[in-house]
Length: 243
Image 1 (cartoon, rainbow, N blue to C red):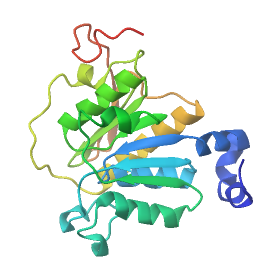
Image 2 (image 1 turned 90 degrees about the horizontal axis):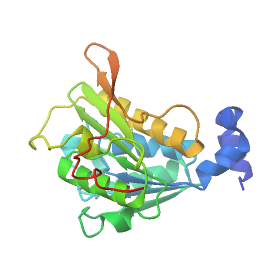
Image 3 (image 1 turned 90 degrees about the vertical axis):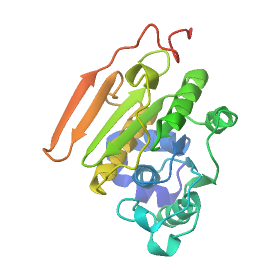
């Protein structure tokens, strides 16, 4: 049931999907893994859309070098856990939603527990080891996963639906080397917003998701391309799963 404030706040978007759709968003829970350049715009746009519970997990604290791109972290937040910085801002942006802040490392031991109550998972991370853990949790739990990654002016997004599409290991069988990478702030803003868009479409069951399609953003040339991705029969993550 939406209260009077919510009816006014979401009026313009309810012109598209009515009160029942807005109530569906309010009942939804999204796990965002990562509170940095991607996690900030994802959390922001899901919050203003009225997603009822945003569950965000990240082990890091805010550093000065984050501030060129991680838009919910400010200079006063340096040294603060990123999840608590985001929680503080989101509560002010939309007090009608619930935000859970988990200042912890995602591991093999806790990833299934972290994901279990979610309707959808967002990969807003910066390393493939933990991304593969999210992929594992998605496959084991049957929960969709929206992957996003960025480098410089470039980025990518794909939505993984267990039992229906290629998984993250199908797309990236081996992890690229871990190293500091360049990034301009607009790139995670664009990719994170696309990820939030995928989440909202999935929760509302509208439109066409990036299922089996890798979207690649070329910011220097302002080009978007999509590539069809098929499951690999010998994929070590999803090849032997039965649905």
